[in-house]
Image 1 (tube, each protein chain N blue to C red):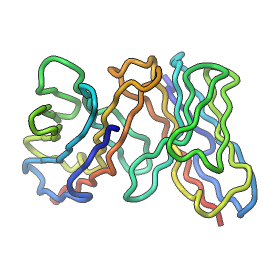
Image 2: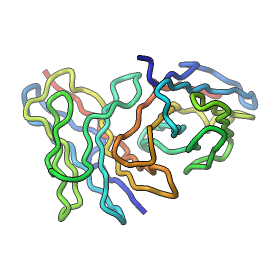
Image 3: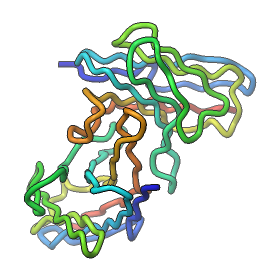
Image 4: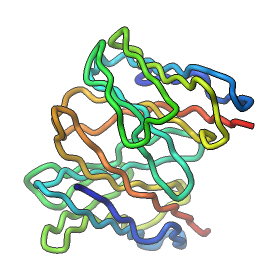
Length: 115
Length: 114
């Protein structure tokens, strides 16, 4: 069974500092991995995804993530935090299950950006 | 360019009351999902549908029923609401069983059962 672990339910960074949100997964098949962002009182938006090929993937708003198979990790980074990055971030892993896309979400990491 | 629309956005129910949450998508997606989001627990799948006229149970289906009579609509019903069903409910859709595309989410329904 697949699972996702996000280390740290809350992360605080200063504006302009590096953002690092950690995600580790387990999957019985080659994983497809996703990061979603949720702004207050909104639904989740797809930030970036890894399917196959290049292990460093770039997403919207300057975020990127690197798939490391040996470490079963898919950490999300951004070189310089902006106030508008304050949100909750969810890592997710997907695998086919009986003809539908079974997605398992992590419990989320709330990012606080300090001015 | 509506995407996934959920109605209502907010609702307060008394214990034992019933209600239906509506999810509508205009992207011609085959697959639709209902999740609930609770603090510290992430998103948990309630029910899903792989096409018009089909439904299936997810991770936490008890106390909920669903219907997909039209491809664009996915209804979530609570027959007898309980305080444990206080949550934020999200509908999502996807275009295929392929794992590539991710989901498109609605903006959620915040339900309080008192």
